[in-house]
Length: 219
Image (cartoon, rainbow, N blue to C red):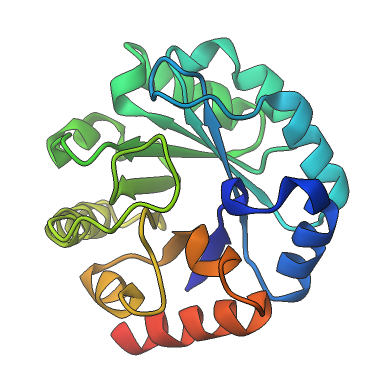
Protein backbone atom coordinates (compact mmCIF):
# COMPACT_ATOMS: atom_id res chain seq x y z
CA UNK A 1 0.00 0.00 0.00
CA UNK A 2 1.40 3.37 -1.05
CA UNK A 3 0.36 6.89 -0.10
CA UNK A 4 0.87 9.75 -2.54
CA UNK A 5 0.02 13.07 -0.85
CA UNK A 6 -1.18 15.69 -3.32
CA UNK A 7 1.04 18.74 -3.05
CA UNK A 8 -1.78 20.89 -4.42
CA UNK A 9 -3.14 21.00 -0.85
CA UNK A 10 0.20 22.03 0.67
CA UNK A 11 1.06 25.46 2.02
CA UNK A 12 3.14 26.86 -0.85
CA UNK A 13 4.56 29.60 1.36
CA UNK A 14 6.60 26.88 3.08
CA UNK A 15 6.73 24.23 0.41
CA UNK A 16 10.19 22.90 1.26
CA UNK A 17 9.16 22.28 4.88
CA UNK A 18 5.95 20.62 3.73
CA UNK A 19 7.86 18.29 1.42
CA UNK A 20 10.39 17.45 4.12
CA UNK A 21 7.55 16.62 6.52
CA UNK A 22 6.00 14.26 3.95
CA UNK A 23 9.35 12.57 3.34
CA UNK A 24 9.96 12.15 7.07
CA UNK A 25 6.37 10.96 7.48
CA UNK A 26 6.75 8.06 5.08
CA UNK A 27 5.10 9.27 1.87
CA UNK A 28 5.77 6.83 -0.97
CA UNK A 29 5.18 9.33 -3.78
CA UNK A 30 4.54 13.07 -4.04
CA UNK A 31 1.49 13.61 -6.25
CA UNK A 32 1.80 16.72 -8.42
CA UNK A 33 -1.39 17.93 -10.14
CA UNK A 34 -0.70 19.83 -13.35
CA UNK A 35 -3.74 21.69 -14.76
CA UNK A 36 -3.90 23.82 -17.87
CA UNK A 37 -7.23 25.67 -17.59
CA UNK A 38 -8.48 23.82 -20.69
CA UNK A 39 -8.83 20.15 -19.84
CA UNK A 40 -9.93 21.21 -16.34
CA UNK A 41 -11.10 24.67 -15.20
CA UNK A 42 -8.18 25.40 -12.90
CA UNK A 43 -4.56 26.34 -13.66
CA UNK A 44 -1.76 25.12 -11.41
CA UNK A 45 1.93 24.53 -12.05
CA UNK A 46 4.38 23.72 -14.81
CA UNK A 47 7.75 22.00 -15.24
CA UNK A 48 9.66 24.78 -13.45
CA UNK A 49 7.84 24.10 -10.16
CA UNK A 50 8.16 20.33 -10.63
CA UNK A 51 11.91 20.85 -10.96
CA UNK A 52 11.91 22.87 -7.72
CA UNK A 53 9.94 20.15 -5.92
CA UNK A 54 12.43 17.59 -7.17
CA UNK A 55 15.30 19.54 -5.64
CA UNK A 56 13.51 19.65 -2.28
CA UNK A 57 12.76 15.95 -1.79
CA UNK A 58 14.05 12.47 -2.58
CA UNK A 59 10.50 11.06 -2.71
CA UNK A 60 9.55 9.99 -6.27
CA UNK A 61 7.35 12.52 -8.07
CA UNK A 62 4.01 11.22 -9.29
CA UNK A 63 3.06 13.83 -11.90
CA UNK A 64 -0.56 13.87 -13.04
CA UNK A 65 -1.05 15.82 -16.29
CA UNK A 66 -4.61 17.16 -16.47
CA UNK A 67 -3.84 18.93 -19.73
CA UNK A 68 -4.93 18.83 -23.35
CA UNK A 69 -2.49 17.19 -25.77
CA UNK A 70 -0.03 16.07 -23.09
CA UNK A 71 2.31 14.81 -25.79
CA UNK A 72 3.49 18.42 -26.18
CA UNK A 73 5.00 18.45 -22.68
CA UNK A 74 6.25 14.94 -21.90
CA UNK A 75 9.90 15.87 -22.52
CA UNK A 76 9.63 18.95 -20.28
CA UNK A 77 8.11 17.11 -17.33
CA UNK A 78 10.51 14.19 -17.74
CA UNK A 79 13.50 16.54 -17.64
CA UNK A 80 12.01 18.32 -14.61
CA UNK A 81 12.40 15.16 -12.52
CA UNK A 82 9.19 13.16 -12.75
CA UNK A 83 9.31 9.49 -11.79
CA UNK A 84 5.77 8.76 -13.00
CA UNK A 85 3.82 10.72 -15.59
CA UNK A 86 0.12 10.05 -15.86
CA UNK A 87 -2.07 11.25 -18.73
CA UNK A 88 -5.82 11.13 -19.37
CA UNK A 89 -7.33 8.90 -22.04
CA UNK A 90 -9.71 11.79 -22.80
CA UNK A 91 -6.92 14.32 -23.42
CA UNK A 92 -5.10 12.83 -26.41
CA UNK A 93 -5.88 11.10 -29.68
CA UNK A 94 -2.54 9.29 -29.56
CA UNK A 95 -2.54 7.56 -26.19
CA UNK A 96 -0.22 4.71 -27.13
CA UNK A 97 2.33 7.15 -28.59
CA UNK A 98 2.22 9.28 -25.43
CA UNK A 99 2.70 6.26 -23.16
CA UNK A 100 5.66 5.12 -25.23
CA UNK A 101 7.17 8.62 -25.06
CA UNK A 102 6.96 8.53 -21.26
CA UNK A 103 8.53 5.08 -21.09
CA UNK A 104 11.19 6.23 -23.53
CA UNK A 105 12.49 8.51 -20.77
CA UNK A 106 12.80 5.53 -18.45
CA UNK A 107 9.78 6.62 -16.41
CA UNK A 108 6.63 4.82 -15.33
CA UNK A 109 3.66 5.64 -17.55
CA UNK A 110 0.25 6.13 -15.98
CA UNK A 111 -3.15 6.34 -17.66
CA UNK A 112 -6.22 7.81 -16.00
CA UNK A 113 -9.99 8.00 -16.41
CA UNK A 114 -12.42 10.73 -15.40
CA UNK A 115 -15.43 9.55 -13.33
CA UNK A 116 -17.72 9.56 -16.38
CA UNK A 117 -15.34 7.62 -18.66
CA UNK A 118 -15.97 3.86 -18.97
CA UNK A 119 -13.19 1.40 -18.16
CA UNK A 120 -13.41 -0.09 -21.66
CA UNK A 121 -11.32 2.89 -22.79
CA UNK A 122 -8.34 1.30 -21.01
CA UNK A 123 -8.36 -1.94 -22.95
CA UNK A 124 -6.03 -0.84 -25.80
CA UNK A 125 -3.33 0.33 -23.37
CA UNK A 126 -3.33 -2.37 -20.68
CA UNK A 127 -0.27 -4.08 -22.13
CA UNK A 128 1.77 -0.89 -21.89
CA UNK A 129 0.64 1.13 -18.85
CA UNK A 130 2.56 0.85 -15.58
CA UNK A 131 -0.13 2.55 -13.51
CA UNK A 132 -3.87 3.06 -13.87
CA UNK A 133 -5.41 6.02 -12.04
CA UNK A 134 -9.14 6.03 -11.30
CA UNK A 135 -10.43 9.53 -10.57
CA UNK A 136 -12.95 9.36 -7.73
CA UNK A 137 -13.81 13.06 -8.08
CA UNK A 138 -14.15 15.24 -11.15
CA UNK A 139 -10.66 16.68 -11.70
CA UNK A 140 -9.82 20.33 -11.29
CA UNK A 141 -10.20 21.22 -7.63
CA UNK A 142 -8.96 19.82 -4.32
CA UNK A 143 -11.15 19.06 -1.30
CA UNK A 144 -14.00 17.30 -3.14
CA UNK A 145 -15.91 14.35 -1.71
CA UNK A 146 -15.34 10.77 -2.88
CA UNK A 147 -17.86 9.58 -5.51
CA UNK A 148 -19.27 6.27 -4.11
CA UNK A 149 -19.82 4.80 -7.58
CA UNK A 150 -16.05 4.82 -8.05
CA UNK A 151 -15.78 1.62 -6.00
CA UNK A 152 -17.36 -0.40 -8.78
CA UNK A 153 -15.00 1.11 -11.36
CA UNK A 154 -11.97 0.39 -9.14
CA UNK A 155 -13.03 -3.27 -8.87
CA UNK A 156 -13.48 -3.49 -12.64
CA UNK A 157 -10.02 -2.06 -13.27
CA UNK A 158 -8.51 -4.46 -10.73
CA UNK A 159 -9.98 -7.39 -12.68
CA UNK A 160 -8.55 -5.98 -15.90
CA UNK A 161 -5.11 -5.67 -14.30
CA UNK A 162 -5.18 -9.21 -12.99
CA UNK A 163 -6.15 -10.49 -16.44
CA UNK A 164 -2.93 -9.03 -17.87
CA UNK A 165 -0.67 -10.81 -15.39
CA UNK A 166 1.36 -7.60 -15.19
CA UNK A 167 2.41 -5.67 -12.08
CA UNK A 168 0.34 -2.56 -12.80
CA UNK A 169 -0.31 -0.20 -9.89
CA UNK A 170 -3.93 0.85 -9.33
CA UNK A 171 -4.12 4.38 -8.00
CA UNK A 172 -7.20 6.27 -6.79
CA UNK A 173 -7.38 10.07 -6.53
CA UNK A 174 -10.16 12.09 -4.93
CA UNK A 175 -11.64 12.36 -1.47
CA UNK A 176 -9.38 9.71 0.10
CA UNK A 177 -9.30 9.92 3.90
CA UNK A 178 -8.72 7.60 6.85
CA UNK A 179 -12.50 7.14 7.06
CA UNK A 180 -12.92 5.61 3.58
CA UNK A 181 -9.54 4.27 2.46
CA UNK A 182 -10.33 0.78 3.77
CA UNK A 183 -13.22 0.26 1.35
CA UNK A 184 -11.21 1.74 -1.52
CA UNK A 185 -8.42 -0.76 -0.81
CA UNK A 186 -10.97 -3.57 -0.57
CA UNK A 187 -12.16 -2.68 -4.08
CA UNK A 188 -8.61 -3.23 -5.37
CA UNK A 189 -6.58 -0.03 -5.12
CA UNK A 190 -2.98 -0.11 -3.90
CA UNK A 191 -1.85 3.51 -4.35
CA UNK A 192 -3.85 6.31 -2.74
CA UNK A 193 -3.69 10.03 -3.49
CA UNK A 194 -4.74 12.21 -0.56
CA UNK A 195 -4.60 15.98 -0.47
CA UNK A 196 -6.65 17.56 2.29
CA UNK A 197 -6.85 14.12 3.93
CA UNK A 198 -3.16 14.58 4.80
CA UNK A 199 -2.51 18.31 4.75
CA UNK A 200 -5.49 19.25 6.93
CA UNK A 201 -4.08 17.16 9.77
CA UNK A 202 -1.47 18.32 12.31
CA UNK A 203 0.87 15.33 12.01
CA UNK A 204 1.50 14.15 8.45
CA UNK A 205 3.50 11.12 9.52
CA UNK A 206 0.80 9.91 11.88
CA UNK A 207 -1.87 10.41 9.20
CA UNK A 208 0.13 8.59 6.52
CA UNK A 209 0.73 5.69 8.91
CA UNK A 210 -2.98 5.51 9.73
CA UNK A 211 -3.92 5.63 6.04
CA UNK A 212 -1.58 2.71 5.35
CA UNK A 213 -2.93 0.78 8.33
CA UNK A 214 -6.53 1.24 7.28
CA UNK A 215 -5.75 0.38 3.64
CA UNK A 216 -3.95 -2.79 4.66
CA UNK A 217 -6.91 -3.85 6.78
CA UNK A 218 -9.11 -3.60 3.69
CA UNK A 219 -7.08 -6.20 1.82
